Length: 150
Image (cartoon, rainbow, N blue to C red; front, side):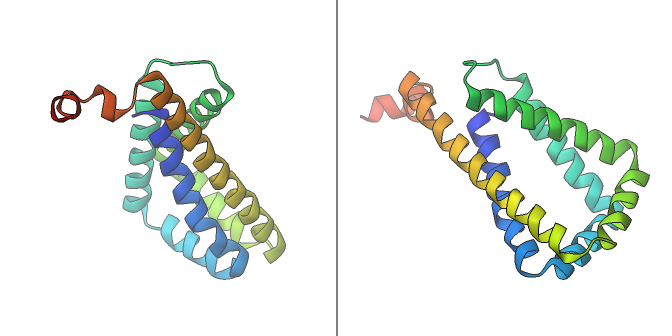
């Protein structure tokens, strides 16, 4: 998986979910607790995160740009987080219990930070797409079907 794709998927997901925590923090926590209470769904999400993070880390590093480093750091964090979700389900339960005891303002603040992070990841993904296009690494220039029809 390209780093740009990973950044856009993570950014879009976080930016889509985070505003709910700003508008309705109690509903956000209740929904998150309900989601994390379903172990098969938690395992599915963890395996998907593990696969995406691993695919990013298996790609050779095209450059040492700050954008590339940020995406690889987030990929490492997603791999570590997903392994913890798979191997330590009690940790997921304890985090869920802790979140339900928080007042509304930390949930709102965390959601604002999450939203900003989502926008940052979308911006980084777009920058990486631009860098790939400048180097000729995008799909249009690497796909032989695109050159034979042009």
